[in-house]
Length: 213
Length: 213
Image (cartoon, rainbow over all chains, first blue to last red; front, top):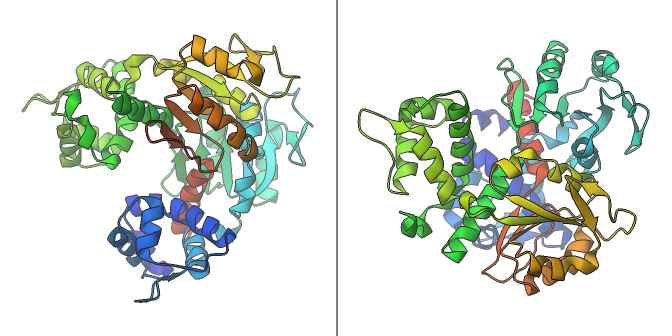
């Protein structure tokens, strides 16, 4: 099934983490089966949208039975690559890096946090989530020895320009970028940019609509 | 133009913050005008998608001239309600709350941070971004006196259940929820949930596709 993934529309891919979260919550509540109608209602999309989305991956449902939640949850997790146990580091041990390290959902989703780095020598050796903060000098050797897949960049703009080329050089596979600046990397390296202010702007839109401001 | 906003599809609304960011960057670079084709290329969508999106709000372009960036930037900012200068507090002064308070883009986007709260008495009085951390006892009186519009919830799940009803009671207009738990509020209160692990899952998907894992 996974070989057919390459042509999945980006909008569908973007919905997969949400499906994954919802199904995980249902499993925790002991629910084992759900119809596309019920799932759609919970997620605020139509039943036909749900069926269409899942058909991109070959479909997981049975007519008249609905979806087996455990199976669907595992399949979507596989498609998202969560079972690959990607090894992850955080670069930047300031408040944001620290908050992300403490984010219990990263481990729950199958990402293994193996290292934390910061250029500030005062932070060096501080223990965050059982890991000592390392100086930037260790970056290349550590990533190579530990086969690190993902770097989470919790850095200011200026630092990004110094760090990204070093990560590219040692063959990092993916970058999660919190720096609010575009980064340029070769095509074979995956990048996901997080813009925290986007959600605040979306909230502002909703408030403005509610108030007729 | 704004009176027609209510029927704008959610997917278009979700793209507006991104348009706003891109246009802001172009303005900073001194670009004054752009065609839907160029803008689409920059944003990874088609020119017709751009035109369709902007038509939801009445359209801003002129045939053969393209879009006046300054005008478009201001209009989208108005639609997003950024010119309303919503007064914002952060509840939770841990690492995440601290990182969000330091997030310079919030102020740049027109949100005025007026208060920070935490239940931990040890944090009380600590200065973050020029504001003293306040105890939770002050929450209601401060929000009422200062006409607070938005509360950013940088709290663990358990604390959420205690805090949200208090904010609802004093008439908060919007909640930006970082707690990874669903919150239930009356319909007239806007809620935007931020799931930091969603972006990591999307990154994982991209890596998996790149590698053929």
